[in-house]
Image (cartoon, protein in one colour):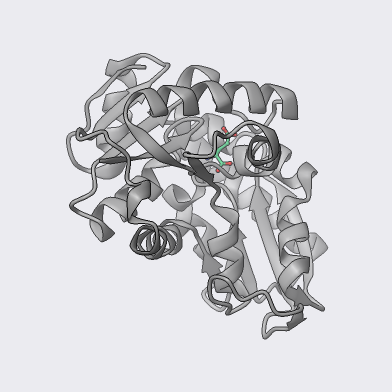
Length: 270
Ligand code: DGL
């Protein structure tokens, strides 16, 4: 039994870490498409082709359920995959919905009409492709009314994190927060809509101020996955081994991953 966790690179490790802690008996197959990261500057067809190739590789590794721990792939490719590509015995789930459920204080399967929620001014930080897709605003509109969302495309942050240049990543985060605050001076909440960004959580929080509630996905996705597997236990596939796959240089990617998760992580070539 194994569940796949996919990201364009290292960001999905923030989700992997949370799901591993929440579900210690489930083996996870992590796939980082590091040689093609960042996805955030690619067009939708490109993201679709890369994401489907990676998901096929995880099916080969014994996963029937794959979590796209990548907002860019969730925004640009997931709907198309679900409409026409995923076989009936497999599932691919994205990371947007748990986040929006938390923001709108809804539970899974609550299909009641959109209603007013407590937060009215929300800052969304995401990759250029995620912002351009408007997928977050679309999902939010199904659940909440009267929420003003100001989105900030955070160019360069994923590249800096993938390169391990955390000084550059921090400077870029501060300048993107500054740009957001010029458009929306007092957001009540901020959404880190890219799984790389929790690695910069403290910088976002510091730049935004302690009064802003910062939502990130890792723990929310872990709770949703635990709930999903309880309701669909058969979706834990046949694979029995946890593994880390990358399209990049395994030694380099392993070093960065070990540094981020503060435990030894060994990637192998996908
Ligand atoms: N972690 C991916 C996300 O959540 C990063 C996308 C990228 O590669 O630009 O959007």
